[in-house]
Image (cartoon, rainbow, N blue to C red):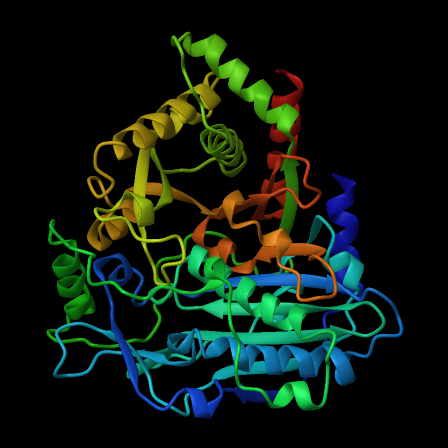
Amino acid sequence: MSRIKSISFLAMEKATRVKILEICLVSPPQEKTTTQTSLSLTFFELLWLRLPPVERLFFYEFPNQTISFFDTILPNLKHSLSLTLQHFLPFAGSIIWPLDSPHPIINYVPGNAVSLTIAESNTDFNMLCSNICDASLRHPLIPHLANSHEQASVMALQVTLFPNHGFSLGIATHHAAMDGKASTLFLKAWAYACSNNNNNLIGESFSSPLLSLPQHLTPFYDRSTIRDTSGIGADYLSAWLHYGGDNNSRSMKVLDQFGGGVNATTKEAIRWSFELTSSNIQKLKHHAQSKLKEENAHFSTFSVTCAYVLQCLVKADKPKANGVAFLFSVDCRSRLEPPLPSTYVGSCIIGHKVLYETKNLSGDDDFINALKGIKEALQKLENEVLSGATTLAEKVQMRMNNKIFTVGGSPRFEVYSIDFGWGRPKKVDVTSIGPTGGFFISESRNDSGGIEITLVLYKQEMESFMTHFAEGLESL
């Protein structure tokens, strides 16, 4: 536990300093984007209309000391971003709710652009890339996603230089415009464009406005087959229109009342990344099978990972509420009829919940109790993915009666494969998980077959979590 204390002390001695060098607007090539584009929000997207943005952070180490950030890396990032945006026009637009429209829309007008902040930091690069650090140190590396009552930007980016070490790429996205799968598709397309331009970094190659993407990176926008047979969208629209007692609120202003987790900007908040190895996961599955004694029982890696982390979180947090609600999202692309391709760009996830009595997650059978609830919830999805979907009103009500824990990300995103031409990320993080009371999962960065998990807790709770996490695995 002394490791947490020493890192906190170091952060206090050498505070983060991020100097903004430039804020530029990057637009798609104008000769390729001459018409206005708009997309109506589907019922999948309406839930997230005024919720805080998703913030992700990628750290890249310089492959060698001879490469120039300002002469090579930055120009290539800017140019390839512009080329990529011609395929992702809505990402340069904004979300609005016109008076003559029954629902909000994503609107792109030629000339719209993505805000790209260029910054420089003297913070210890290796410490920021480590598995444990003060949570507040990474937040200055994330761009602000502009929003007002009239409109909300879809995406903002920030590139921060760490001289002689590397750079970070921060991305903030509006969840009503894209889910994690869609934003990852964009990042992979951008990385493809950037890495393919690396052999011709400056000069004539930058004059071409054309970029052809392979099929697996080409976005699909057609949402005409998405049908709201349950009236979920109408419920969301009504809830937002009358939110806060207003009779006709078409505001796009982000709300902050949906928190309840950790304030990750304080010095007391610790961010920790750790791994459940493939061996750990197999032991958890075997333990579950021996306890539940179900014939031909199958436990997914997702279910045992979430169940184990959840019961450790409950023990560390010691909620005062009698109930615990665990929220997770399900990708519906392949579950719809007809199904959508994996390259569909938008938000196509539905939130589901598992409710527990707090006492059942803090005793001897805590892992098994957590696993049973998650397994039952996943089994229900096989019949109807939209049944049991969490509504806005339910989400507000749940926060009044339960301690909320959430999970984000997916190992299937393969975020550690996103290479802009200078190597794979040294570290990937989701900085927005703190306030949600959540944890983030991805594939292991070393391709070991394990699961990397990141969470944010206050120092005392983190020490307790680390103890329960280690002791639980040792007892298997």
